[in-house]
Structures are given as C-alpha cells and as structure tokens.
Length: 206
Image (cartoon, one colour):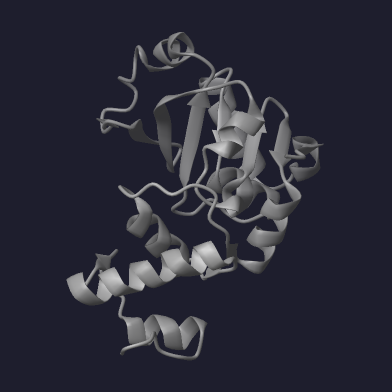
C-alpha cells in the first residue's frame, strides 16, 4: 500500500484546522482517523462526524482518559469513550492501538476512510482520494456486526458501491432492509427507493 502525506499547514484558515489543534493539544500523541481526517482533506466542515481518536498503546490511552471529568456527558462503550469537545463528537477508540498508519488503514472497512492525521501531517492513499471525491464505496474489510449500520450511514452521505464485492454488500443490505424494514436514523430504506436512486432499476425478484 502506497501512503501519501502532506502538511496540515496548507489547511490554515479553515475552521477544521483550529479544531484539530484544540483536540491534539488536549489529547497529545494521538492519531485522528477515518471520516474526520477525510473531511479535513476535502475542506468539509465536521458537522455531525465523529472524531475517531486512536492511541499508540493502552498506557497512552489511560493517560488521556484518567480524568474525563471535564466531559460529564461522556459514555463508555465496548469500543470507545464517547463525548463532546468544543461542539465536536469525539470517540477515543478502545482495543485498537497502533503507531503505524498502514496498519490502521488495513483495519478500515471502506477505502474512502483511508485518511489519518498524526502530528502535523495528513496521510492518505490515492484510492481513498478517488473514492472520497467520487463518493464510491469500495469494501476493504467486512464486519458483520456493524455492516448494515455502516452501509446505511454511507448511503445517506450519497456513496454508491463501486466494486463487485461492494455491490454484493449493497444488495445484501437492501434485502435485509426489505425483510426487516431496517430503519436507519429515522429514514426507512426500501429496495425500490435505493435501486431507483442509485441504479435506476430494481433488484431481481422485486
């Protein structure tokens, strides 16, 4: 995997740059990965995007989470510490520890998520830029526990499947939506609506 990087200095003047400075100051030694890093690269506002924060070791995470009293609304789940900081939704990711950007990228589910910020640099791949720019969904890893939620999330963002594996995941999501009336963020997805919007046709058998 070829990983590219560029200085965050080129983003000075954008509001996201200063928000990142605040986060990195409060939580030193972190990597910011996924959607938030992608939005910095694309000069998009964070909005409702989660700021996913990774640590190099459990000890580093312990140092950053030993006192979360400034965030009385924080919630601890199996996968992360969740709270708001300066109006941003922050997730301190648990159980994934790394200093290696490539290792982190290999843990992502979609190629469009292969962006990360470490120190004063943003890291990315050519495919990540292409997919994020065109809103293409290429599956890298499948997690059956979160698959439908993640697919639904990116459909709402306007992404469409690009590779055959992504299309299979997409169709599986639609079939499940049809049988279970899957409701994501109060928006009901149906095979008819999804295929009309993204392919202009209906799945076989409907």
